[in-house]
Amino acid sequence: MGFYNLRARYHNRHSEIARIEIDTNDFGIAIDKKNRLRIIEGLKKLGFKYITLDLEGFRSGSMDE
Image (cartoon, rainbow, N blue to C red):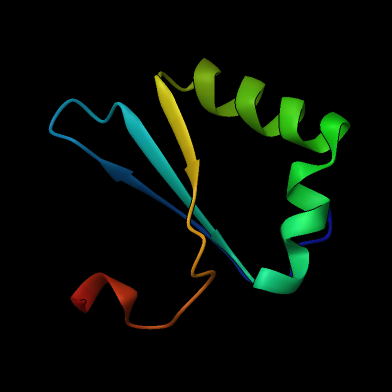
């Protein structure tokens, strides 16, 4: 899809939630219908129940916040 910075984190003790971090400039790419469905399908296949997009975008050190 062409994301320059991308990170996915899992949350919840059962790893039900995937939080996607990308540059805010790339939000349009992620929410494009074709790409959005591809992201959802791929993460659901891995067992995630919920997929979220971090609206603050990709940030180094954000796990420490």
